Image (cartoon, rainbow, N blue to C red):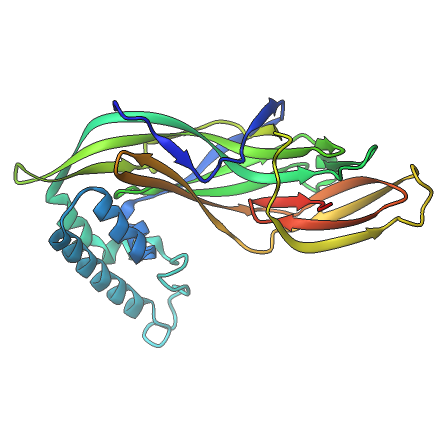
Length: 322
């Protein structure tokens, strides 16, 4: 595109790639109308990213709000108690067909315009899934024991959303081999994706009404491969989360190894963002992931020390603060 893309939000994802067995597969795609109904603020930002003026943005938001109101009324249990459309529009809307139906006026409004792609640049991104850490004490180690899993695999359902009237994509990332970290190491499991950033021109009736950028992972704008493993650089310092477990071994013989298992379960779904800055424009790729099962972690801990196992805020995973 003639302009360098500055990526922000994943500066910590650096290191040496290692082998890992697994695979990835498509689950579903989500068009921009559903995304607009799910998140009003994001829709407004997407319209501005295309370089549209305030009048067009206000018009789009008005139609979006009308569609949301109609959908909420249709989904109301007091109106149709026998129809299972339980969730609110602000979350994961039940009944995607209903969202498409009530968003048709919004779609018709936008279809009166054309998006012309002037240039495209592919950017590689490693989407973090899980960090496994081992205490920084000699002979300590940590592992994810795939063989101990009932299905002999760990899976993440990864939802990816674009920007600039871009839809979404859901991908299942599956790991089928155990992986481990030696003392002081931090191993990251990630989903490698390549996303297309497009410079676009918006026209209406042959007249240009906007210029900007779009990231659309819902169709050809996203490519992915099997999950990978990364030995993070030694300067990686995780953002420590909640305490999960303690191991009191200060009174044990120094050097004696004790082995433990811990069942890791995801507590909530967090949203993350990767920023792409091109000149004065800032596009983004938003993602979240859901672990489809718990993960059995194994720890080898050296006697003579006490240990505290914490979650982390960078993504799912564990860390051992000094």
